[in-house]
Every structure is written in C-alpha cells, then in structure tokens.
Image 1 (spheres, rainbow, N blue to C red):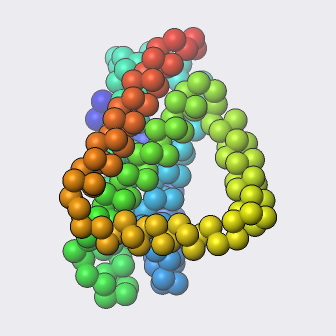
Image 2 (image 1 turned 30 degrees about the vertical axis):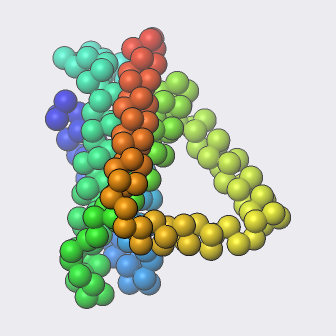
Length: 204
C-alpha cells in the first residue's frame, strides 16, 4: 500500500514544485495558513484521483498485486499524509518569511485535519461512484449556488464563518474537541468503508 501512496507523490513530483512556490506567494500576501493547507490538500488528493482515471489506469492498477481494498485505503491514508506534508511546509515557510512561531497550535492541526477529512469523506465516495469530471461540475454548480445564496440572503456569511472559526480556536473544553474529533473520525471511516464497497463492485 505504501507504494500506491508513493505513486501519487511521484506522479505529481513536478507539480509539487509549483505547489510550494505558490504557497510561498500566498504566505507573502498573508493568506491564512489554515486556508492554504486545506485547499492544497484537497487539490492534491483530487489530482491524484484524476490521474488514476486517465488512460484506463484503473485497469492497470487492478492488474497489480493489490486488492481493491488496498487501492482505496491508499487514498484515505494518503490524504492524511499529504495534509501533514502541506502543513509542515506551510508553517515552516510561514516562519521563514513572516517570522511567526514554528510551534503550531494543536487546535489549528485539529481544525485543518477535521476540515480535510470532512470534505474528503464526501468527495471520494462520489468520485468512486461516478467520475471526477462530474464531481467538478457538481462543485462548480454548488459554488455558483453558494455565491447567489450568500449574496442574496446572507451577505455577512463569510464574516460569520470567520467568527465561528475564531470561537472554535478559543474554546477551552477538551471534551468538546474530543467529541467533535470522534464524530469526524467516524464519518471518515464510514466514507472509507463505503468507497471500498463502491470500488469493489465496479467493473473495469
């Protein structure tokens, strides 16, 4: 399974340079580190998934000595590894460029991991059931609806989101964090099992 995760990294090794360069640019204009890690983690996972759909790559994958369960599991485990990778580099460059402390609040780590896990929990089963191109169309439509609804009915929605995040970062109750973390982990595992079931039933 480790080789499957390495495959996703090696295929995108040239793009990683672009990722790192643009991360530096975003940090130079003071874009939130949480936002950067979240976006780049999702983009990297989706790019890795779309590469598996090109030129019947799934047929090749299924001809290798890996079970379909291992192929799916590599995406879910890889997501956590990739997120950790982007988190490390983003906060390292943030320190080098802006002089911010290297020590990252554990609340920020939980927030980033939680957001990535929630989004991936919905994205991967849909991608395995259909194709990423349909997911892209769906996300574009959803984003358009978001813009219309927010602009028409909730003009202060973005400020509300920032307030919620700030409140989350200031909460001191450890039990609340543990409960939320447990719910997210259960969602992630449930999505993992669903994706395995969907992929095992697919014909290539």
